[in-house]
Amino acid sequence: MPITRVLGGDRFDIYFEACVGNYWKRPEIMQWLFYVLPLPKNDNCMQRALLILLGCTEMIAQLRVGAIFFLSVIIPVRWLSAKTHLLEHRKWGERHMASAFDCVYAKCQKIKERPELVLNKSFMMSVFSKLYKKLPELKEYLLWSRGEKKNTIHGCNVTESRICGLKLVIDA
Image (cartoon, rainbow, N blue to C red; front, side):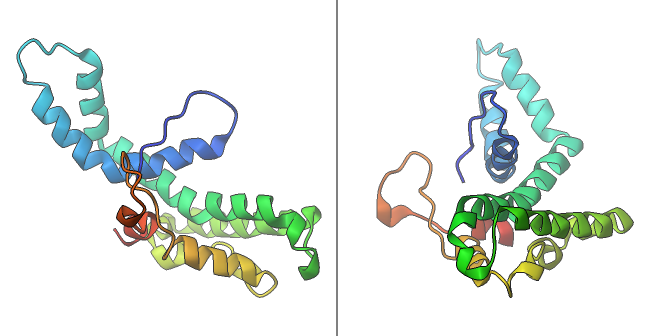
């Protein structure tokens, strides 16, 4: 998973997308920092701060929850936002997006009662399951994006080297 660069703007979803790459790559980043920091003439306070930050339990938890939120809520909402105009045959329109947010609200209420549910994969990956009957395309997209969708490996443009990135992160 590539680490997404977030430079301002007002799209909150990008911040959560960045959590996926940062959570997934955190061990590699830490390993690189452990290697580079002791090198002679390396007095980089930003690297030291990053090492401390990425080793902090609170930051690890925040990245993990942000990645879970991205995978379980942001991806489906992005799809619904982009495809709503194509779902007229399902009697779905812009005004029906409120029912999608009702699904999120219902899950959040359950998480409020039992916070450990955030780490339950089947619970979190079924946020929009109530919509699957009405919108089978959504279910089909989510199964594909979370399973078979191939992502380019960071720094490589060769099609054959693509991996099922979201599946790796979800299964981890």
